[in-house]
Image (cartoon, rainbow, N blue to C red):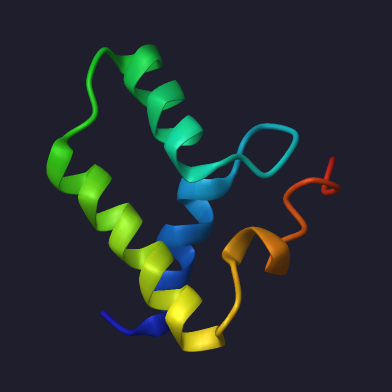
Length: 71
């Protein structure tokens, strides 16, 4: 798995149906919808977020324009 694959996973963990979501909110939504969300996956998503934030030197939500992006 390379950074491209990791970035796709991160984007999936931020994507709502019509907007960019806070990563914890997205995981809570999935947990509510399916009844559970594996802790290992939860932790992995947070590590991906941290990994890319360190790599780019910016908050991921600023990069994806979380507060303004709408479909």
